Amino acid sequence: MSLGFPLLTSCGGSQTANVPPPVDDTRAGAAYTPSGNPPAHQGLSKMQTGVLLVGAAALYYLYQHHKQSQAQGSEGQYYLSRNGRVYYRDAEHRAHYVTPPANGINVPSSEAQQYQGFQGYNNSPTGRDLTSLSNQTQ
Image 1 (cartoon, rainbow, N blue to C red):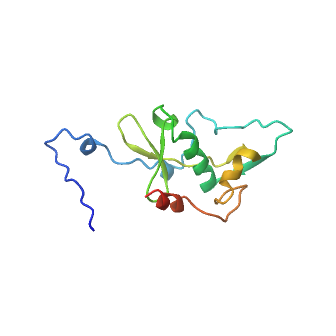
Image 2: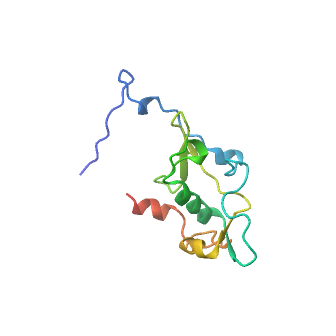
Image 3: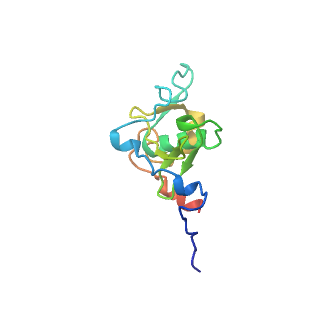
């Protein structure tokens, strides 16, 4: 069975034909900083134990927290690409790839358990990456 793709022409009013190419903010060394600070749970109480999420674990955390958002831009809805990268769309519908913060995201242990099998959970170099998730959703 072959998949057919519609042919986009410039004479129609198709919005997808006018979408600019993706922007790879990760190439410039940019990190996730929509408000200038890494998200979520920076100040854990002394009674809470935290887990540091970096790399794939941090990206999956960001994806999970933004996938239902109704805002726009970097605070808006996040998507998981077929190649396992996380991105959002700006007001011009241009895709921007997300890079996890270089210093990671500190998350309470109870909330971090769902990210345990991913690379970067508690700064671990081993584990799953997000390509395994993108293959499951197709």
